[in-house]
Amino acid sequence: MDSEVFTIGALALLVAGGWLIDLLNHREESRLSRGMARQLKKSADTVHGMLH
Image: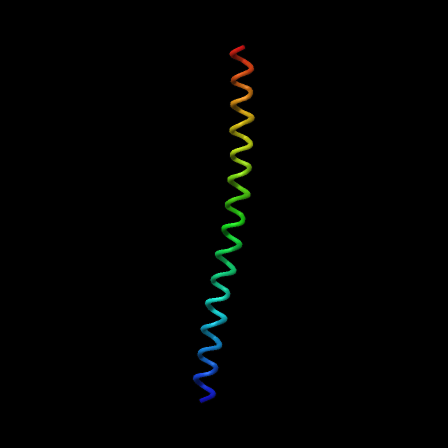
């Protein structure tokens, strides 16, 4: 009985750890996406300023 409880607990920790890693990776991607969008807007503003 203890073996089954230990196995279920270990699997629960593994799933929770995977979920946490996925959550942290997703957060970093959105930070990167925001930075890229800001750089693209800055570049577009520069090009627009050169055309006028």
